[in-house]
Length: 365
Image 1 (cartoon, rainbow, N blue to C red):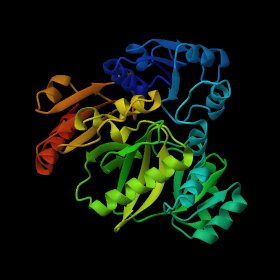
Image 2 (image 1 turned 90 degrees about the horizontal axis):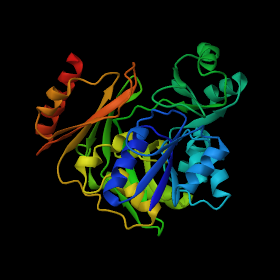
Image 3 (image 1 turned 180 degrees about the horizontal axis):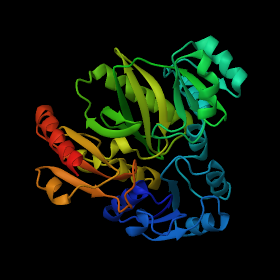
């Protein structure tokens, strides 16, 4: 089996590495000649909307996928229209690229969301403020990630400033939610419609960037896990989805609100490489290749700590027991995800202590 991956970032890299163990040969397409994935798998250098490059990738693959949601949806449709097996489907990518479409989908399948309204200009922003109230969050409909493309609006007289800060582009205004914690559900659906989910993950962010994920999320009742899985499966089935999907959620009391989804393997699931019986990367490849899905059981507490802006001396991290370092081979710069550390432990208290040790090493680097 040969898999083509649109995108050569760290997700493409980890997909290619997972493919080695399955006997799956991966080829990536990325504008950069030195992408993280190009360090471990054959790569085609080209723009994501370069039709010749896309056809070259398709010729080197039996099935094509993509590793991040800012790949042009038109590029995936271009391949699908020419009979190329491509998963997840282009429709899923298009929905995930537009926050208005995303929130509408969640509502349609019964996943509650914060109150929201479309914003196309300054006048409609004022209308949305009147309808939703403040405080609220103004988010661009497209291309926002890691806290970019959004601003908290607390006073109506600052509406014009907020509109300028998001670039005066089509946006949505969402009610600011007072939530208990941020969680995510990772799910996978095969070509045959079979589904599987990993345990709910508790996520901690700083400056809009994911820093730590804990799995299973502490004190997650079975009812909350069941609700998250039901919502994920509803989205998967509605989209005719194949592959791994992540849905970021707010826990409010005993309920969940949908925030956003990622039609791909996801940062909050990197811990699955060492922490689950089958990683998200292996299961994504299994799903799109038509292979049976693997077991998503987690046998002991696990955490993922992102390495942002710098990678500390590896000897300090690797001196800790049950700590696994993943370096993406990127050039360091502020706010850039350069790698992650997976931490495993026998119980939640031991895990917390070990995460604190890792965090102290990162702070000293």
